[in-house]
Image (cartoon, rainbow, N blue to C red; front, side):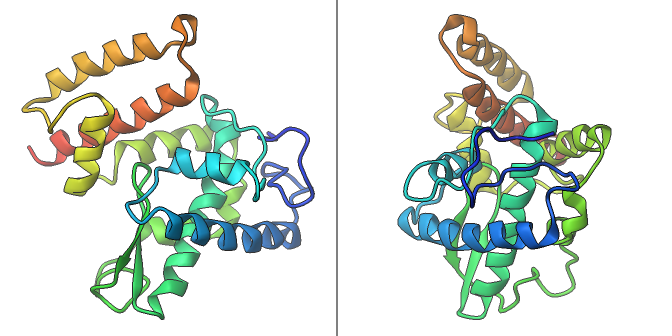
Length: 224
């Protein structure tokens, strides 16, 4: 379950196995904390998870090796550690009056409205608790597939933020959020066909489309 090939010394180089020791993970996390904060400050309008992964693969960081985006069990270790870093960074930034908006389509720094890195008062941030628990880095393949499906489908009962919904609509080629979900499904199917590798597309584009589709699905499901 190794998501990387030919890792550099500081790259995330192992999936959830015995070789991925806690000490090694903490070293990787320390490097990622520095790199992620730098990239976020360099893109004040925000950056998607996939674009952030790409930035961390390139110089000067080179903290991530090759990522297989269309295989959940190989994408998961990278996704989990990245979101672990994002939630740790959010807690750190809370001390200086900044907050971090975390979603797959847009991760960005903001001025904090509530002085609390754990979410609004009285609100239990289940995603924060999950990603800060490093034991969740090591999951069986079946659990990974279910978890990733649930993640992209959105938190039950909660609508995506308006900015996230608009970004998802734009990813599928809409100028604004469409009026109904069948319109989304038609556009999504056409976009995936055009992005298929046999037609010159790539799996990363398809993953972007899948994320956007999941956000819009959650929007229509939870706002009905």
